Amino acid sequence: MKTLFISFICLLCAAPSVAENISQFELDNGLEVVVIEDHRAPVVVQTLWYKVGSADEAPGKSGIAHFLEHLLFKGTENLKSGEFSETVTRNGGSDNAFTSWDYTAYYQRIASDRLELIMRMEADRMRNVRMSEEEVATERQVILEERSLRVDSDPSALFREQLRASQFLNHHYGIPIIGWRHEMEELSREDALAFYDLYYAPNNAILVIAGDVDPDEVHKLAQKYYGPIAPSYDLPPRVRPQEPPQLAERRLSFSDPRISQAVVSRQYLAPERNSGDQKEAAALTLFAELLGGNMSTAYLAKKLAIDDPKAVFVGAFYNGTTIDYGSLDLVIVPLPNVGLQEAEDLLDMAVADFLEAGVDHDELARLKAQLRASEIYERDNVGSLSRRYGQELAIGLELKDIQSWNDELQAVTAEEIIAAAKKVLNRNNSVTGWQMPPAQRSTNEVK
Image (cartoon, rainbow, N blue to C red; front, top):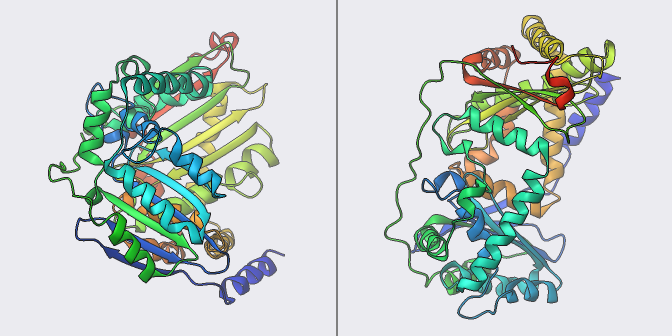
């Protein structure tokens, strides 16, 4: 059955499909434009990516990148407060925005004959945002309430925040994207405008247009609406504080009366994807998937949740789509009769067993076939394609890196997977956290 499944997936991967028809150009003011053509539906997605995120914030101003994202939905010289989203909705579309450590992005999905409308409005707010003191005060309260809802009221989110803060000794990846509450409370209109004036500029942005569009028409509209915008001549080099050598494992325990399920989590620093050098990241991607990417087929699930059940969930996750550092995470949620120390020991032994036994070649072939099929399926979703290309370009990858990623995955050998994993699994570069109800703390102290 396994051989038949792999053969079926391989046939699917070899079958004709709608190819990614992608073009790229740059305006005189430095705006990079990528066009992804797909004429199967009369829909277009515009995503504008600014190459600035929370890791670029000045000390003491945590949360300003996310705060400014909110404020861009206020008015401009040409639009009243809230008119941007109201116009998109009135024309049958949807819009949103999101902030990460490495980028901030603004998104609209709408009928393709409305492309000029959304390009005009998005270009307008690149340089013409207007915000009153009252609007800033109101929106500051909104982000504080968002932190209360998404972080402060969620013990698991608080645990992850503490874990990440312990992982990074110096880099701003250890600071939450939404910000620390005491610093968020002090963010001002002047802070927002200074961040906006410095970073929101065509020479610090990538425009991705995906869907039922013609590249020549996109070029004409981009030149018309974005072309006249002056670049930021004071744009600083993108240099962040780097991590010193991490010489000691860190551990923490976190208890909260709202926690009902104990968890053991460990995070390691790991290499990120870099332009022209993605081989190690590809090996770690496959390692995480084989080890703990699926609760039905992955090694940890079979060993600790199926064959001899000790956990209700166990997983491994790799994230290398970052500028400075990637991460490899291991998580186990033990059964109620399994203590946290026992769960951590079982997890460590299972990982050691995987490294000792080596990669199952049939499982590796199955996984590679699935990844190839997933790449083809993704081409049916212009929103997903737009987001992938924008995100990966925003962290410094080039088109050739994005388009060769699946080939990189296919070329990785079993030996390279084990070698990459052994290099990363250094406890000096890790943080281990126990999340537990207070009743368990006395019997599960971190050793």
